[in-house]
Length: 119
Image (cartoon, rainbow, N blue to C red; front, side):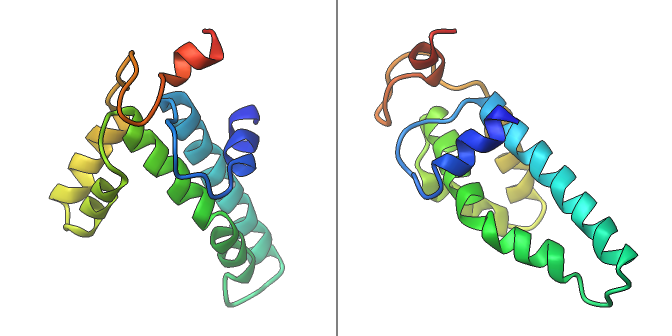
């Protein structure tokens, strides 16, 4: 849960770097929350998924920000995010970028988040 709160506390911070663990834990917790909200929405008998949609809109900016910071950790510009708009191949390449370890030393986007956290 700490990783989720960390991302939300950096709501619109597009500078710096994010570790793989920070990114993937946020994605996992976010997916679980959307799933649970979807179940609640169905249990309430709503035809329109209003609750999950409102939540998704609320976390859109933090999701984008942590994605850009994750790309920075791999020494790539945030503009590489646009790969997801290329059908199939773009999504695969983007997934590989997100799973790639970050650079261990200082890069053009800042110091390594692992070094900064002292782990």
